[in-house]
Amino acid sequence: MKIKSIWFYPLLVVITLNYSCSNPGYKTSNSASETNNIETKIDTNLWLKETRGIRDILEDSKGNIWFSSPDFTAKFDGKTIHYFSKDNGPNIVANIHEDINGIIWIEDGFKIFRYNGKHFIEDKLNNNSVSKGNQNSLWVQRGLSPTDTSYVEPGIYEFNQTSGKFYRYPVNRDDNNKYLYFPTTKAYVGKDSTIWAGTMEKVFGLRKNAFISIGREEMQRQNDSIQMGIRGIFVDSKGKLWIADNGAGIFVYDGVEVENFTKKHKLNKSDTEGNSLHKAFSIAEDSLGNMWFGTVYSGIWRYNPKTAEFKNYTKDDGVKSDNIWTIYRTSKGELLFGGESPAAVYKFNGKAFDRIH
Image 1 (cartoon, rainbow, N blue to C red):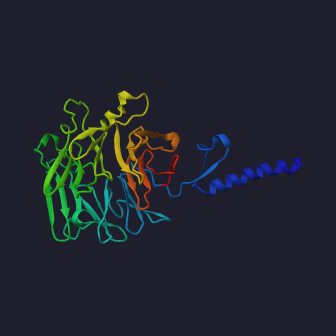
Image 2: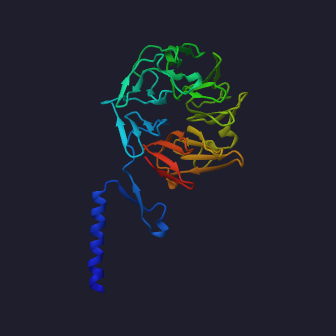
Image 3: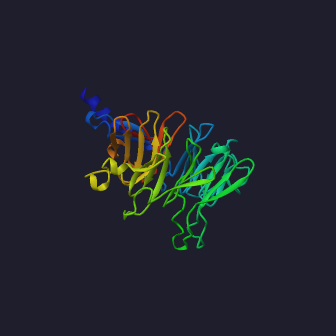
């Protein structure tokens, strides 16, 4: 019996090493099972290439999941990830749209690209651009190229089946601060058909050809020395507008006034000894009515409005990325969390987070 066990052990090691080497997508993890000494297989074959963060996610009408980053756009068809880079499409920090004809569009504020079934081609914004948004329109913010030395009037384009129109934001021209109203969020259609769009300095809401502006004054930040840095917006199931600011935290607009949500719940950096909710980037709501917030260096937060309870998920819970750029809700009601460093996409399993892309 001793002879058999002596020969069996090295054979098992050889088999394990051979399997690991021949399967580059195979890894072992003890993070969730160290106490039981059980190894868990993690399939990394569907992980996205490393890049400077996953900036936008979209599920199209065919069930494909699209991801955008500064270095590539990717499509997951349920089996394989297909990449589109500067060699066969856009090389931009992009927002992704699908129009009512099922065509995928990618925009970054000063260019727009159309997917022709094989690759992306640069296209002009015209009356062929239509989407599932307000009045079947595609809403695109006007941006500013980082290399452009001239002032570009900030605002938002509307394109539908019959016409195109540009709405200028109600701000004074400032040649010395041309990036104040540079687009920082994707345009968002609210429950009341208000079109919301975020810039570094303000959030603008367009309804019936008139703008609502939410900035430092409306957020009661006149004496706040923290630089404005709006990064995410979201309208919940009750119609409230949530705003994520990278430095001042979460704010909520109920249609009348703006509440400093982070300050109210004492989750500023000065209020906590550990993670906080002051560097917020992304917001979403799940099917149960819980609010989710993605942050920089403070993981992912879940807030239950019914109980006013918070839960913070960190690296110990599977959130390995330093920054959660975006949160997207799929047609099945699942939330996908796109991160940076590493550029990963996570899904909540009920207790912790699994990296799925």
